[in-house]
Amino acid sequence: MRIRLHGTEDECRRTADAISRVLDVLETSRPYPNRPPSRLVRLYLTVHPPAPNKEA
View 1 (cartoon, rainbow, N blue to C red):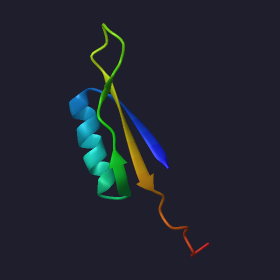
View 2 (view 1 turned 45 degrees about the vertical axis):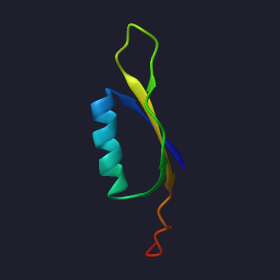
View 3 (view 1 turned 90 degrees about the vertical axis):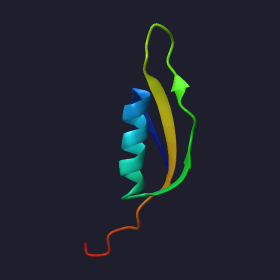
């Protein structure tokens, strides 16, 4: 599963760190800058989706 984060580089790094505490992150991309004059970036995470809930 791919997740795209969009924000400042610091926001994306902090959010990627938080996600890694609850999902198995297999890969984190480098930050891709948006077109100028934007100072925002995109960061892509490849994660292993959680196992299905068997309680249902």
